[in-house]
Length: 465
Ligand code: ATP
Image (cartoon, rainbow, N blue to C red; front, top):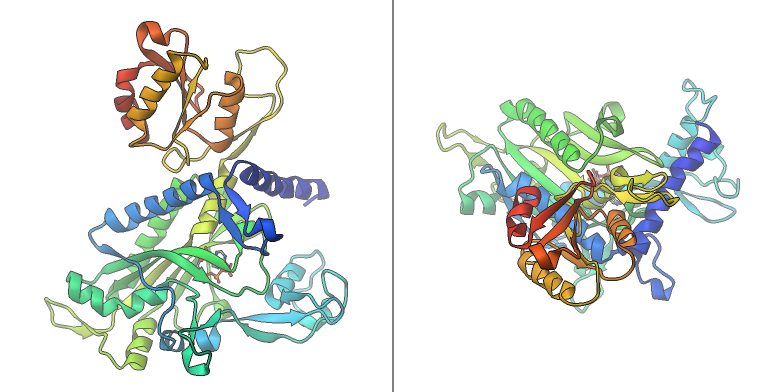
């Protein structure tokens, strides 16, 4: 890729990040204290978009399906959970230090980057010590395995017996509640449990804004199946996850599904597919879909000494269910949605004014996910404009998140709304007092329609619900 093409791509990420900060989507955490590295806060518009993503996921995968139920398990779990799952022993990343500048890197990331450089000879795999530090060219240490779990103490005594961990994934909470869910909900295999929540990983390197952070959110499903039906169910989940990506607005050409093979495949998994997205900083994992056999429930059965077998009510067959795990990151969904939505319009959007226009930015966020659904823009700050605007807000604010903007020219106000992806703008104009109608402008088509104030609820119900 040429240097200028690379620059243009990085520019996209930079431009998006600066827009997200300027318009209240994402802030650096604890900014007034100088910020905490790679920790982010979701601002007033960010939290709306994030909540809309989570709500849509919950609806599509939990409440819309009779074979699914939800769960909200504790973040801090019994430490045995992580012994059973293998996280205590194996949830590590390969770490190297630079002997000169003391910076830390993930060895697998450095090796991967090197293998993408021109002239790399696949026949002669590189050793990490042959690679210089990417920051200062210093010598790197040998690889050490570094456990990614955050450790803390529970209760008032800081001793080994009170060590607990912040969960590194939400899945654990589902496995330990498998029996509770079967017993209380009378679920029949195949069925799934979905959960949304925070997960924590003490990542060695954090990168690319919210793409990789130490505190993040996951939307995970454990879908329990009979061992004979895993292939069929796996195919169904592949389709559902692709549909989800489409719903976020991800273009087909930006999504790659990659079969995980060889050493990369966990020993208990017979099939794993990574959903990779072409981020401006490279093609990277967005989501994962894994068939995990009955490894997890078997491990938890052995460590807890509780019987986690399932008895088929018809055939009376007893077995430990196998599991298919669609695992999705909320923050990566947020980022991919916005990268897809980010659009620059050269020369401005309006075709009605002749004045020379600058480039305009808009976020073509799917309407269902947009943080603000409707903005109300009275053309004058006098009455009866303001009163009518208030009446409209009263009619609609129970169903939609609304913004009210009375400052600046109407063109500037439209631009402000386009920039945050608001699907509809309502203008209270000079004819409103006469005909009790307002002008509704659609973000994507720019079409303007006169709609009666009393018809607004119905008008938006068919467009936004
Ligand atoms: P990666 O290879 O990028 O480290 P992973 O394979 O470790 O990811 P999983 O353990 O499969 O990730 O986690 C499931 C999902 O959780 C990922 O597909 C991603 O969307 C999200 N995720 C994982 N780690 C992070 C992180 N540090 N920051 C943000 N999201 C994350």
